[in-house]
Image 1: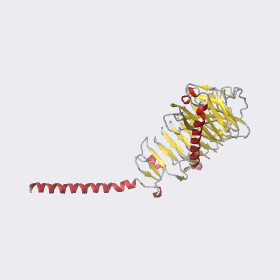
Image 2 (image 1 turned 180 degrees about the vertical axis):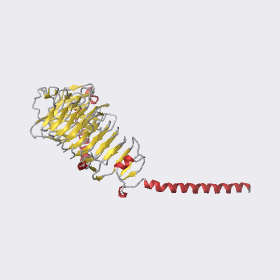
Image 3 (image 1 turned 30 degrees about the vertical axis):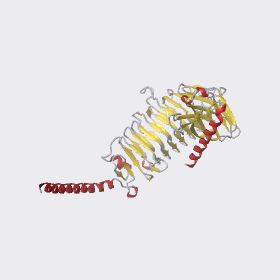
Image 4 (image 1 turned 90 degrees about the vertical axis):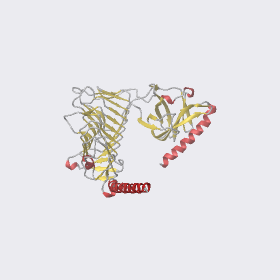
Length: 451
């Protein structure tokens, strides 16, 4: 009887504990639901770290729960007459520049977005109709994959009395801004892979402290397309910038400088008004492109620069994914990377690059200068072979190698549908390997078309 009584007492305690836990779970449920409010309930802004939702970006930034290092996500939609000040070190991410638009209020003399805290990232927005699409009063501002258009200035530094630094401006479309596309009073920044089109001044680099207060601006400006601006690039007071692999296309003035101390390194840019020759057949002009006495591109390109991130269709380990750089007076739409194996020795693996969507003036002889990882080459499969349509060339030389990459040069006559470059295997192996690689290329190409 004593044992039975103890068992009954224990059972009652277990029941009470279970009831108590059930009540706790029930009380927590409404709070969980509150954190999951969607756009239809009027909460389009979300702190991804806290799970809290807000009606505006500013409300989300100002919230006590929002801390430095957190990420704020903004749903797709158009947000009218917004001025946002990012005064915490957060990332503000839209649902893509095609989907999330913020319209500023230029009549109120405010920026669409003003950054006043260091270490801020802005990505995935269209920013329009402000005094500036993005104004910055901070260091380490990262502006990525945005469309910044129809502002008085696209991206600019607000202060005339303090020098900020280390901005990264990458992958943006910056177009049709009245004055500057990008206008910076700053140092040690990166401007990369942007389309800068139809602005008053495409890139305006003005450092009033140079060269007396700052020993080196050390900015990197590369792989941008700077097109149809009144002035492509203004080197006003800039010093020790490296400007390379950009395409300067049909700007009224390609580049200018009126400051005697502005001295920068310019190399391997394409200038659409360059009329030089290429006697060496290496894709580099024989004579320099001169802006002024202190700013000269000694190695102007004979064709536009394009860079492709290519992925091995078979996956790792070989060949590794990498960037392939192409300089050509034809336009290359896409590049895919394939793996080719010697059937007699599977350990010997080569590479196969397939270029397609090639456009240019029919009947012209076009050139391609291609740079790829040196590790792709296998000495037993040298030279390389190039095929375009029914034509085949053998390349017996690498025109340039820096120890990590190889550069080759060849010509082709347009029109062609595709170009292939690969190690030239022994003739008895070439046909089956070529058929296998070509079949894979067609499959990948069709899949990309369907996406």
